[in-house]
Amino acid sequence: MNLLGQAVNHKIFGKGIITDHCDNKITVHFEKNKKIFLFPDAVPRYLTLKNTAIQKKIEKINKAWEQKINEKRRKAAEENQYRSLLYTMKIPPKSQMAYNLSEEALDGLKYVDTGCFLSGLNKGKPRIPANIQPNSAIVLTDCTPGNEDERKIIGVSMVDEHFWGDTCTDGRVKLHETYQLILPHEHRISFWKYFKKNVIQNPWGSVPFKYVQNQVMEKILFDICQRTAETVKAAEAMGIYRYFCRINRIPEKLTIHKEIEKSNVL
Image (cartoon, rainbow, N blue to C red; front, side, top):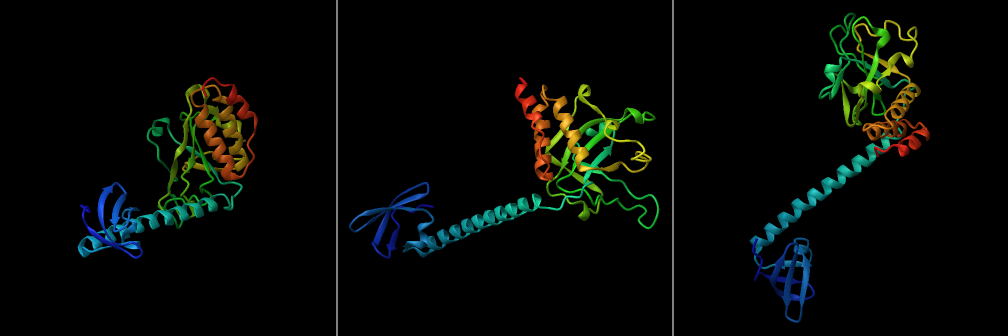
């Protein structure tokens, strides 16, 4: 838009001519002096162009820009409100998940599927993970067929911060894009170290997931941090643990920080 030479009017300085336009600034020469204005903000707030067609174009630009700014502010306000919700939400004591899958399924994993009911009124419908919400972590486990005693924790992921299980209708639990970790083989942990088999009856069967106590999950994540403290996975493990503790309102164990500080990796 060529504004050079356009006639304008200012309520105080009177009539003037635009003599320079550089980025978001315009220079206007009035009868007694020259002034610099922000563009397009100054039109029509301070300046009115004699050319009504250009005036309308600038007003249209201003309106679109204002709408864009308002939309950003609205989204920021909604995000702040949602963040407040995350850190004040009610946390069920058993809102974590242990999930059974094969190691081959880890590649590009973005969701875990809760499976479907095999009988009853809900036969064929997805299982609703009602207790799973943004504070939930999922330990990913695997074992070879017939070797349940050797089940290992092969990875962990937080749930996506916008996922709420009680509103889930397709049985797909979305994983967090940032807080995910696949454990190297040498740092994988025995799953049954944290559970008694008589507590989890029929360990998996047709249901690929089990609910886990929050305090048990904290212990698992703490141990993962310790096992990976001097590896390239240390920062990822620590990030997940700190996020988990913060969103679940569980105090962090300070000994982890000391172990990480000793590591040459960070």
